Structure formats: structure tokens, C-alpha cells
Amino acid sequence: MARQKLHIDELYEVSGKILMEKGYAGFHFKLVSDQLNVSRSTIYEYFSNKDELIASLMVHLMDTIMAEYKDMDEIARPLAKLRNMYDSFMKYADIHQILLFAPFVNGAASPNVEKAMTTLRQQHYILNKLLTDVIEACKEEGTIRREIPSELIAGLLFQSIQIPKSRKVAEEEWHNLIFQVMLDGYGVKM
Image (cartoon, rainbow, N blue to C red; front, side, top):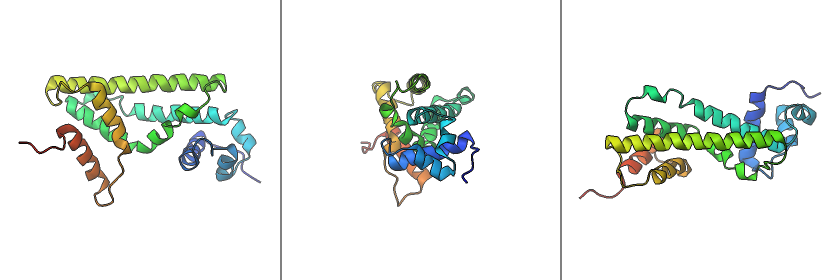
């Protein structure tokens, strides 16, 4: 007999892995219930459909990311704040992969999905605003060129997690190189 008790964090962890492996279309409660050794009805006690589960998972993941920035004011220098945010993006790169499924979620599937997707959009806006504000502070400090639009820099930072990891360079060093190239460029100084 399958166990019938389930912790929400287990459900989120397994759901995230399945979503990464199978994608939105391949995500089903049966896969989740099989991996958790529970009946599908146990999952339905938490969520009425896959869109509710995926939307809730995304909000949970964004909550995790946003918690990283609650103490940002303790970091004095804007460039150190920017590096902290970049390191966080790299730390949670897998989460970003899951968040890419947001456009597939049917926001009208239930009021819970609609609410979760609204929360997710608000969180994304707050994160983008925080990043843009830090970039603007770096410009005022003189550590980032003023003529480059802050939205471009923010986009590059967000997208940097998509750069494939090198097999020849240690992960931390790879992240340092990416950040350095974004900060200094890759052209030879003349």
C-alpha cells in the first residue's frame, strides 16, 4: 500500500525534478505520485490540477529566491550587491529553468492558479526593480558605464545563467569569469 502522508516540500522537490525532466506537457500527477509512493488522490488533497501545483511550486521557488535579498541593505557597496545578486542567480539557476514554464500554465484553471500567477508576476517585477536599482547605484558609484541601458545589463545578468557550464573550468571560477566579462567586456584594452 502506498503511503498516504506527504510533506509539501517533498511534493515540490519531486514536482520540480519531473518538470525539468519531462517538461510541462509530460508532467502528470501519476509520475509525481509514483515517485512519492502515494496515491494520486493524496496529491489531489493539496492541488486540484497540475496547473495549481506548478503555479504554487513557482511561487514557492520565487519566495526562496526573494529571501536571498531580504538583507541586501547590509551590503554597503552597490557592486558588491550586484555580485551578490549574480551569485544568487547562479545558485538558483535550476529554479530559473522551472520558471520558464510559466507561460504554459493555464492561469484560468482555478482561482488558486490565477492568484499564484499574479503573485509570480509581482515577484518578478520586484526582483527586476531591485536589480535595476542596484545597477543604477553602480552607475552612480562609477563602477558601471552610465551610457549602457540598465535594462540591457539586467537582461544580460538574468540570461547569464543560460550560458553552458565549461567542463574544463571549475564552476565557481566559471561564474567569476562570466561576471568579469560582463563587467569589463571581452575586448582588448588599447
